[in-house]
Length: 307
Image 1 (tube, helix red, strand yellow):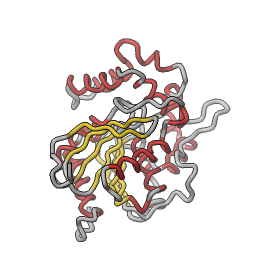
Image 2 (image 1 turned 90 degrees about the vertical axis):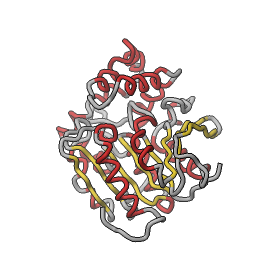
Image 3 (image 1 turned 135 degrees about the vertical axis):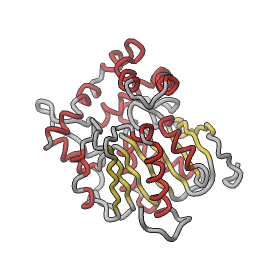
Image 4 (image 1 turned 120 degrees about the horizontal axis):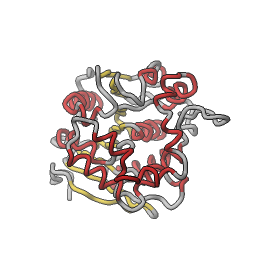
């Protein structure tokens, strides 16, 4: 199927990368927008953005390796941020694009920042939603008591025996988080439960926590938040849009203070009262900011520099 004939209705597809098969959903034609989900979700969290932006872009939402319909790697060290950067590059090239805009949420932000720092020449722009820059994340987890408390649960998630606990009572620990969100329907929650129920998918999701080791200090184990340790300096000239809700219980506003030192072309948008789940909670706001940013940064457009 050529780009000009590609349907605006989402289509499911797969890319085989040796030991890993990636599942992704795509639609539309034009400049590439790559959407990267967070924990404990999957590609489905981007449904509102795909519908809106497929009218004039090629939109792609991928299940990161280990999640939902993408393969759970055989070894722990084959999952996580850096491996997913390689997946994003391979998927973009497979789809015929040399450049893309990367849009991430939660752990998808980690992949997005890592991709941008490793492949600036491929990146038209980076959008981060409810996620932190590696240096600021590391600083907050080492120094800020509020952020340390906000992600204290990651110390539990990264333990190797936690999958059986989270599988109990139809994934009650994850399920209760989503069931309390008024903007998710029963069908939405059921979609996520199906994703967790695929063979190995819960282990694959939790492997990310074990592989990366993010969290505040615990005993003799130091805090860790820098998920791009192989890159220095952690700065970019790629345009960046950072969106966050000031009521996010997991990533606190401290994680955005000083971001301008790492991104020379930066727009920050705070959503008053917004929580961690902005893409589904405030889709109209998120979509409007995305479209304005893409207009500014896409190679299709050469005017309009303001968001």
